[in-house]
Length: 177
Length: 212
Image 1 (cartoon, rainbow over the protein chains, first blue to last red):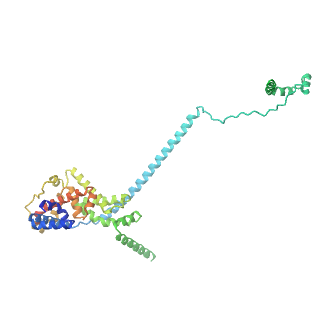
Image 2 (spheres, each protein chain N blue to C red):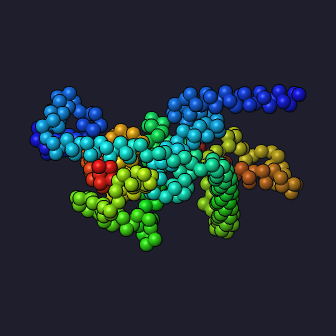
């Protein structure tokens, strides 16, 4: 092992993390090289000095001050949480108000414009017809007309005219077929 | 009478809880605190206050400020403990917070002309420059007699570049592993080893005239 390699391994050597073979090589180099041995001693002595520095202790009121700061911290947290909740509530209320106003505005605006009504489809149905043929020589009608009596039977007859005509057309078609 | 008995009962219960907390490891104490046991936080403070104070004090060199920073560390721990990843070591997390605060303090000082270490540090910006102690008139044995050795050691530590000093203190004073130091300082393992080696050599070089 040369001095350069020794310097590379020295960190692990001081920390006792060198593997067996490497450890033996470093120890052998220390015996052979006075300069490296001096360097090793210098480092170890300095570290010993540093590691033995007296520990400093926190001042007497350290705990009290910390406790006071933690209490403040709790109070701040509580205050911040309350503020945050209030802010959230205010935002929610604002949003709800805006939505409500928007809905009301939209409703009012659209009430003037005509709507396209969608209605149920109309299914036309024809009443079942009484297709009994009318004999124009109904005695009641003949009597009423000639006698100038009430005209309701005539009105009744007139009401049934379209149907009667249609029926007669159908009958005519049947006959001509 | 009943009042006295009740007080004694509460006191005994408190003592039992404290003893139980003392027997727990950090992770269990953290779990207890998150479970609502407020006394668990006091236990964490008791465990770490002196260690953190020494670490921060050796890093920034100002006792009063170090106490303030350690308090700040505990405040941050208190506030953010629920976010702490419990699969990791609590001590590493606490030291990371302390290290970052100390770094910020040194950075703030370097922006201020009236700083403690500025004049010292500016001589050591270049990592490759060999470190030499200017005052060679004092004899080491005199220093010992005058009990100035402690001050000399502290001054010597203060003369190391900040990132070397940090690693040096974490290793030599706090006994952290290389891996933990890498995590605390957010560096890779190789950088930690390199910085530690340089810090040791620089420290030994500066302190040598006083101990030979």
